[in-house]
Image (tube, rainbow, N blue to C red):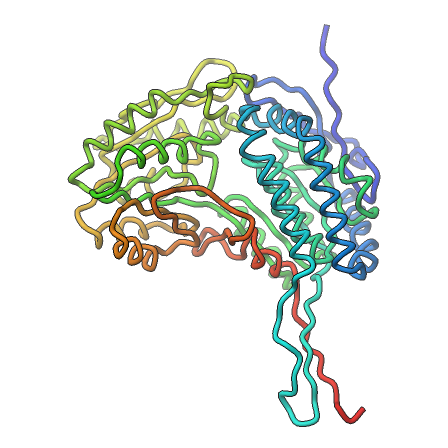
Length: 479
């Protein structure tokens, strides 16, 4: 006897639809490795239909007042909150995340972020109107950019969907959103909830693979393409978008340095870094997975971190004692294992370094020491529960090592010296610097990086403004 698979569908123009050609992909629960649903493998016809629906809805949504858009987003936030248990269950089944932590650490920030952008819709800022030329008055208008093609990643499917559609819709744009092919379930559920709130065509969901995303970005309709994903994917999006000069918003990889000085509160640093490194199985562009420790406390720190790793638990979503669940898919499990298998001879695995169990895609909390700056595992994003540790001799070397990667998304400094903290935060070449903490984010503050971590901001008024364009209007006072 076989269990019938759940059937997910696209959401286009207010209707739930299969792919036009009937193709599907299998959706796997990473905690079990078993297929539990199918989703559309959308092609050009589906993308065309979604873009047409978004384009048709745009003039009406653009012309709504900010207060109307605010009311709609507040209704969405309330509806998500009311159906939190369903959203958490869908996210957990699709990602293997712990149910309790997803309910406490992801759902509340998502709802808060939607409410923030609901308020931001009514607070567009710009220079005041004025006479900058005799007899002429100049006015600045901030307008929505149009249809937005958005591609969300698999590490935080629900939250990243919110980061994309909430500011875009608040600013008066319409959206075609593609979840990752491995994690479409919670996004489709969001569409079911939003269906009764937004006008048809304002919010559309197209499921599919890389080719689907490519078709969205290359489509002539969108005025903007936004992606959270790998550097390679970001480069491809930027190249494709350049052909018709689309606006591009990229949030890509990270390799966050965590700089621990000799005067830091060692116990607190170890405890917080272990959580910030292993949360969500380290599948976070800001994860605290590249630690730089002053040489005078290096050995003590490594021993304490290895102990913390050994005490950190991974397991099934319904286990209340686990900090994180499985890696997202077999390819990601192979990638993480590959980094450990290819470690140079001078590296030492202090904890973990192996798969956990034979069901699902679990990997043990891992600590690796003895590494050099040019080692592969230092320079490239692992995106798994692996924390590396290097030692440094002074502030200058710490900065050299911290900035000596191609990514520039997030970083942290651990010290009791205020002057040192200020110098480090000034000189660290990263979009975010935390001091004596790592990973907290708030809706009011921007999130985004430099270098190969991309450009544009998520969250905050800056993220909201990314979804607007500026128009200058000049009028003669003579009438």
